[in-house]
Length: 149
Image 1 (cartoon, helix red, strand yellow):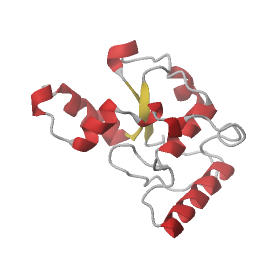
Image 2 (tube, rainbow, N blue to C red; image 1 turned 45 degrees about the horizontal axis):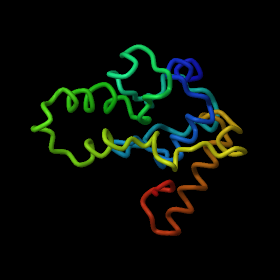
Image 3 (cartoon, rainbow, N blue to C red; image 1 turned 180 degrees about the vertical axis):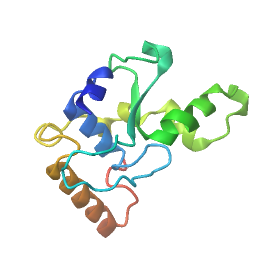
């Protein structure tokens, strides 16, 4: 995971901040189905992928300036690229258009919070417990996402 973050110009704190701002879910389909591993490193590769604008830095590497969000593998590899290839006049998905025009990584909610986002790796026990707390708090307040603006 750290190599992937380095490839896209993200620090652990910045990755955590984006993930928190998205409500610990895929920014497009809202999936959060990756099994909780209780801080044990994944045996299989993570389904979460860092999405960036290929027109900015190219397909293989990013300077961090064009990171848009964190997506599940199906959204990053199939759904979003297919949608982006369509001519503008045929694009009719408010969810995809909103993501492309105002990506979660560029929203104020995705700014790093010192002492929180830089404290742990995204797969650590502390991060999972922080996520669980945020989800429980959101449920009590009756909101969809713990990080909704």
